[in-house]
Length: 285
Length: 297
Image 1 (cartoon, each protein chain N blue to C red):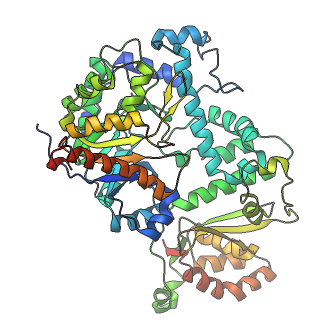
Image 2: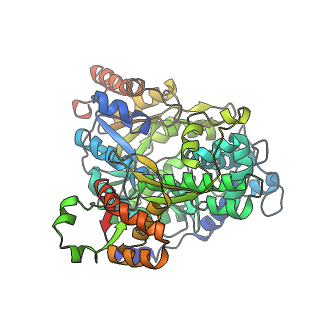
Image 3: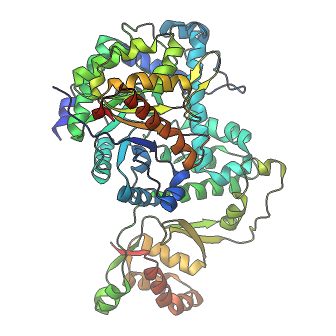
């Protein structure tokens, strides 16, 4: 099936409680917000009240962290039902989670754990992803991970695995450019080989974030500005997409809303530069 | 939904399942004092050897060192969540002691089993009751229980409350037979310490402030009764109750009509308690209604 055309929402930032007050006071011209779905899958209280206020003024896109698409436990349809209920509230144009696992029967690890890259796992994950998209009745995307281990049983590269899953499931890609960079450093691959070998027409959103160089490895921390190497990679990848929504994630060592938005706006500046240099077609802006 | 049945036929590859079970056992094994991975895997084998069976080396890290990153992230993340959800309890210990004496043994006994991190501490008060044995056990238990109740109150639903007009327009004989209950975000608490004012002053400071400073005095000369609830601004708030008001709210929390409450009062209460409640009940009901705390079952 040919990928459908998705709206380019522009540049967004992750909605975090530390910025609520400034958002309501200043009503900044931020294009859109991304929420962590699980933070709002509650029965009541302040977080839902704030979400409803945000929805009055901004588009909101949902991003999840606990689906565990590659886990051995059966898909949790109670969780999916709550996710779908929230999606009806937010009117999210698409919904994403991670190409990972994080849940065994009776145990949640609350982490995005890597999968072995084998054909059997492609088939398993793709089947589950297809079911999720059918159940949610919303375009569903999986995000590439930052990872720190490689398994002995890996039989293909990460990009081959990612591409095979989304194509077999006929779902979409939430492409995290920072994660490509972090994993390339941890596993010693060329990030260009990664993005040149995935179906970029399936990308419906891009993530950017900061990371920490720990010397022996690179950790995806979301606690600092985006590194220049990641901006360079974004500048190469963005023009190859259909012009997709871009989001800055910042989840620890928070800075002010103004500073967070200023960091995110670098993506817009970069897009404008690419456009002025005719690297980007008008449709992609 | 049909999807459930379709999914029931999808079986995970055996090799994947084995790998994940192994990986899971490793990362929720407690870290050492120095935050390093335990050199002995749960199987009893050396982690340096066992990790190489599943995980490839990188140019800079050995297999077990790569696994250690996940082991550390698991524990550090969960420690942070419990520190955030148990503000008073954490401050009674300070970060280091809280992690060592509470978080690690608690999570070894009750590893997370729900997708919501909000529920991570659901068994912590019970765990403290059963496993903590130091002299300040009662304060520690009550603090954990209070933090947990406040956390629950923050996300419970709020149903359309009864309004004064509904109550005044209803025929009295029908009204007294209607079964009342309380909004799900209301919690009635009974402590041996005057805990809520104590908590307010303690949590103003950073977690480790009280490691070197003496905690504020806390009264424990009587039983203290509190109500926690979400106010009209949706913020979690609290008030002190007198025993009799606590009793009546408790009756409504367990779903009861005014007629049944009156029967109970006549049968169970001392005369002075009965008269106190009889004197205040109408005012209390008005206040509770104005606050939106009462709902019909």
